[in-house]
Length: 375
Image (cartoon, rainbow, N blue to C red):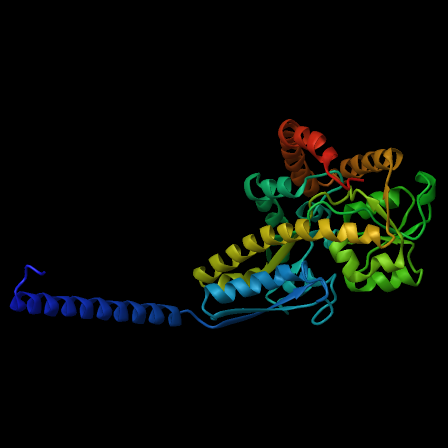
């Protein structure tokens, strides 16, 4: 039974109604303010050229993640449309398109542009270099991103880490390798400094965008090709063009993919949109790596069951490749710009290798050997 009189209850009820009405009115005002604030931001439409075919949903998915997240965060006011390689520009000409402003942004790999500046290799991967996590640590916390952006500033471009495939495989070969001698004259698709190392070992190196690799390998225009790993390689059908699948991908232990933005277009963006774009790239960087690690594990087993033969490069080839890498880096460091990035990167590598040798490597050496299905 209530202790309040009917009159008392009516007064409390009226007060409650008034309070509720006030809260609802306050909510309506706040929502109106939010809509007004949101509508004050301009409608911006950008185009993003990429180096990837649509069929590679994980690597092209990095561009799609950026597009989706800026759209969501801006309530549809900041729109970026990604285009596959060849739809706007060839897959290996994304930097040029962003530089000249024919597109506002791009999604690509820095090492495709070594001809413009060899130090751009560090923006993606260097043979016998950093793993994916080590690469992220260097870029985000070790001064790496600042070093790479100094390189891109010469092109009127800004860069953002926006994807990582993780440690890659060593490529598909039509015939098994029989030591170093079998590399002489071999025609292989491989970009970046890894390609320069292979060339030093006698390989006839070619650089092709992802969408052209299968036909070249299938028709015998090339004898071998590398792309990323089991998931993407199966998507491209490389297992149907070659049987022997080599590991490890020593030239790309943790390659970063990059979002490039024209600096003039960037300067015109509201600061809110700049923050959204940077956050979306950060998300794409981590999400892509997670997806590849999950997908590659399953697909590798399927490839093996389907007849793919896993092959280890062997110590002689790996040792020769490392020696060639050291020589190429030393020769390249005669250039002051390359030397500045290389020395900073090398110091970081020494430190992080020493640390990971204690924590991760000691664990992996014991635990990974117990994993079922290990080569």
